[in-house]
Image 1: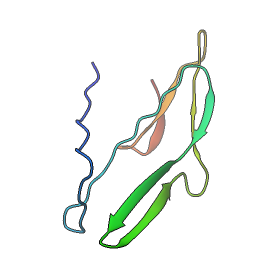
Image 2: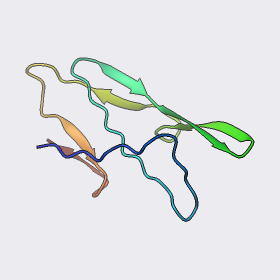
Image 3: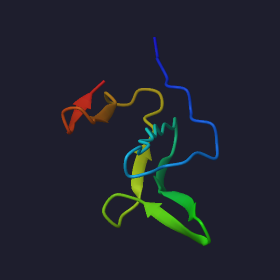
Image 4: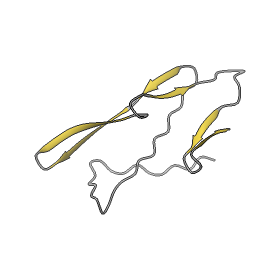
Length: 84
């Protein structure tokens, strides 16, 4: 069973006292995908875009397809790669 948190209604306000953490899950069945997130923000008259990536490199998500080896995932709680 997969339990998902409900996405916040957009737009939403973020402050130093009330931050928002987003959990992003990516999956694919057949490709080796490189990706990053572009987060648009505004504060009063100021606007910008923040790129979220893997320390300057894109994130990668790979699909195994039929007969592939055991899938792995990065567990945020232990900060380690684990087999599924």
